[in-house]
Image 1 (cartoon, rainbow, N blue to C red):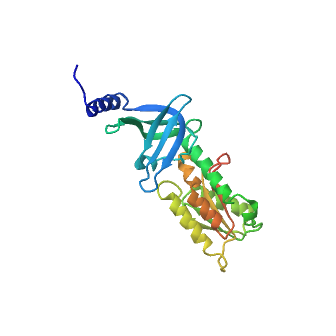
Image 2: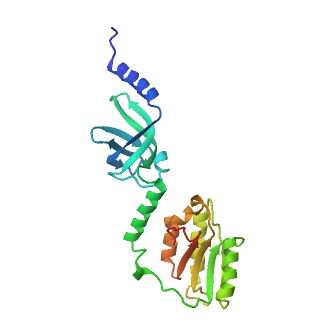
Image 3: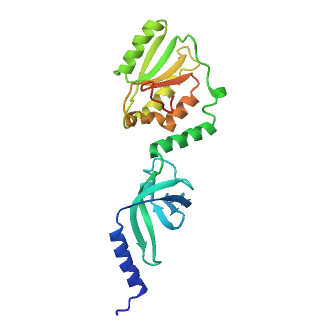
Length: 245
């Protein structure tokens, strides 16, 4: 029988394991989580009641994660086995991670809600009083949208004394969040001037959850919270609930 060196047996194990377990899905509980601030890589173990396996989530894949990975979370990882020959160690190189019970977008939103709740964003004491008879309202929306047409039509019937001013804004796709944040800041910049708005309304019609998800962004929540002008959102249909609301 041929005698193998340690390096040779580890190299053969590497070739066998990495070819056999090129793509795997593994469920378990996150433990011993370490996220390196400099590299951005995350190292953790995945465990069940009987076993543990090491995992790594490199920065590029970590940046695509939609939720914050936490100790004790039950997750499903998708990746491949990688073997480090010098030590004979093996681990799962994670490409994607999903929470077991709920989707990653839902978990990310719940985590953000809790973060903003702790900052006092939802406290009634921190909210500006709603103007009962607004005379001038900034509407942050696309000037060619059905939302703008609907608001003009309804306002003309219910409160014709109110002046609506459309601040043309990108309400979907790449650049939407930054465009909305800038428009809120612009409308709010008139605060305490003769052209001040009594209210700022961020408005757009319905759409898919992917279309509307920009309005769950923390930057928009920050902009609405920090505005000195009373602000509100009217996004999607009545059944849609977004963080901006």
